[in-house]
Image (cartoon, rainbow over all chains, first blue to last red; front, side):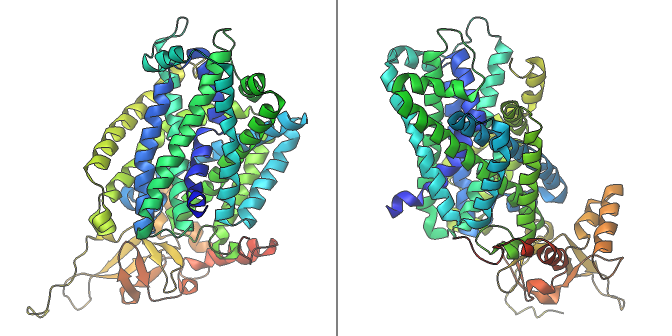
Length: 409
Length: 136
């Protein structure tokens, strides 16, 4: 059991990264419009996040230094500050969207308007960050999110033509009626959603919060190579569900209840209940991840005390940051801005900021002063370098594509 | 002059291995960053020497420069008591160790970066119930 609980950091990070409100909607929408023709973008993203999260976790275990510490140290004060502003803005936007996502999940469960749930959600997230131990937090929400496996049961019960799904995934093509630019936009959205920077902020800070050391390098690998692929499989399952149910009818998807519909069609009321619990856990996990990351990034840039392993009064600025970020996020959410639109923009914008976050991780993972015997070997370097090139290309084309395609519509 | 028969010490690349690194106090508490370095030219002649780590009280804003940097530096020095002209300073004699972080032979509350943390702690965070207990 301890072994299972040991990987809940990876599971929670991946849930918050792959089945948070933005992904739930992006995967449902791409499934309905493109079938599994964009599944490859998720697979590429899972490999990318595994490569960099493994490095970030290894650096944190060996040196005790989380990602934003490295960003400041390797990019210097000025470029580091630019990255801080961009990363904080994106993480804050995502936090706003996730609070809205929790509220939407509660609306599905209760029929009470989601706007009324937003302050409740914000308060609940803050209470967990303020009072619940880091390990308990990741175990509760990581394991609760696993009920989303019900989506796989639903896909199986729908009895789709598996060879057709496999063919769609293996032979990606732009469907009739969709432009190449729109297809590319959604590919980047899915890739960016898989590699959002807050995942490595949270994962590496979590490793420090849990006190990982050189002895925990295997634990790091287990967290990364079980957690992230699991998140990726869940997001592909969601894409498969909407591909099977909505694509033949050419119905477009843009709400959480539509994302849950295929499960209730296939598994009934119990399935619907489980998928709502899963959506709640995943969005709540993502809110914890982004809420904490708002504090982690700024505190680590300035070298302030941070985290949940010390009493709140000993990390006063960190907790004030988290409190203010949550308060403002609730305020923005209450203006009735569409949470789903907010995440779509934040995912795409984050694709533009990714190289500045992942370059320092690659540099330090190679620094023998830091890493000694645990420095990168050739495979990590090869994959890391290839992905860095991909990230730079993606960063360069993201914003023009967003303008040309009017955000994929 | 140094003794040529003594074993060679460690040489550091200041920008790579010291600047922007985390400062940790003698109990392992996080206590700011190496925002800048002070190099002094001794008045009696002789080579320049690194004399202090600059941290907090506008040290970072000074380094960022420009109108915004000057404004931020002036503001942060005005907000906390002490020298209005100069940033926070830790003499090199208080450096205990330099690794992937810089350990100083001081308590975090003796550091120039401590004033704001203390103000936020006593002014706000301590008034919220549960601030003194670790999570359960």
